[in-house]
Amino acid sequence: MSSTTQKRAARKTPAERAAEIAEAAEELARERGLTAVTLRNVAAQVGVASGLVAHYQPNMDALVAGTFTTIVAAETEEVVAMLDRLPAPLERLGMLLDTLTGGSRLDVTAVWVEAWALGRRNETLAGCVREQMDAWQTVLQGIIEAGVAAGEFETSDAPSVAWQILGMIDGLNAQALVRWDGVSNRGTHFARAVEGMVGAARGSLLPPIDRIHNVDGKNA
Image: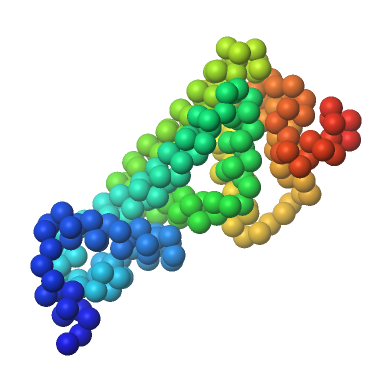
């Protein structure tokens, strides 16, 4: 008996089957990208007929959008939990910059980049992308506003500054996907730029390893 027949023979509740399909789509997206989330591929991943997947998920654009949201929202939640453990806005901003541009999350970056491209023709996905970008801007804006209130930052337009920083993060991460190093010590250059944008003290947002070699910014 084939594995597909075995899968189809196993009765599952609608909720269990829907969850199984969503999990398969997420696995495909993480391993092969959002473009791999197709009716045929999802069915093969689950081990069932394409018709069964279509029954539970008749709109593949919606499945792709939901898969994107699941992946990136989980990252946002994880990073926010890390930030919440730090007492000062300056520390939180420094960790945010280091975490999101440190190269350890390129799998999620790849999902973001694909979503920006696919969203041109998938409005459901585009809407989800906008929502998740708004969520990140809210996180960053909150840190900046807290830093202004604490006297660590100086800016009168936290929303715009948050938007600009996110654009820089997205650009640097997209470049990292193709392993392009346009400049040495890009972490230092990025931190310097953000310090100026939020009005932070010079050197205060440098990555930890760079602070050792740039005491008070004298060797920058």
